Image 1: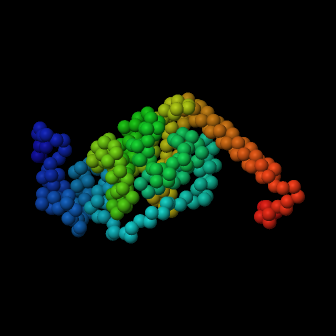
Image 2 (image 1 turned 60 degrees about the horizontal axis):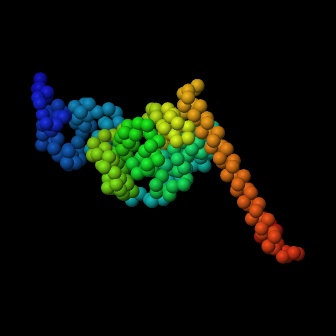
Image 3 (image 1 turned 30 degrees about the horizontal axis):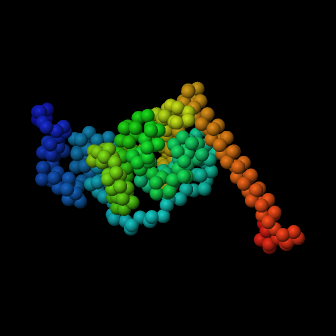
Length: 291
């Protein structure tokens, strides 16, 4: 058996070693690296995946790179739509923060508790409602995550997986270019070429109002649109995190009720002012009569 344990300057297999393990010539493997292997067989790709000890997600990414999908028409810049029934479902998730992500990890829908936990997405321009962008360019988001390095690696790895599936996405290229220019840590993580899929796990959050929370998350890909995923969060029953989440939900409900009351008061003041300005005996406009 060939010994690959010799001391070397960089970790990993050399090109000739990997070619030997995969059972192909070095010249052929080099052409594959240069994307000049249009007729590569599934058996060769499987052999390379085994040699590299790739997991299922990494293996799928290799297939995307080796066999890119036919070039599609330029993607529309119109924002993705959220089905009304799905929006109603998120609003009905009492005590469960939830948001919907689409292309490039854009946040395209959310409920009130998600905004209370992760920040008011609605206060941001639509172009800035992106999980990766917020992670690297928004200080409040960076402070929210107690394990920022782990979360940052995950969002970049997921974005790299998306890039393999959508190589012609011009908005993705613009996002990667902007983050590469503005954030050195993003450049480093992007250059690592790691890939990861959206699944499940636990996030450690340090919220400015309720303190530390450990929330489990589940990623549910929509059957009729695999580019959209609903991500829900919950705390372990009986835990301090559950108490903190319940407190945050109560605070948000009170704040929303206060805003609604203030809005009604303001509307009443405008109505009274309009009535006071109307001359005595003046007829209302046709629109006002039918309103």
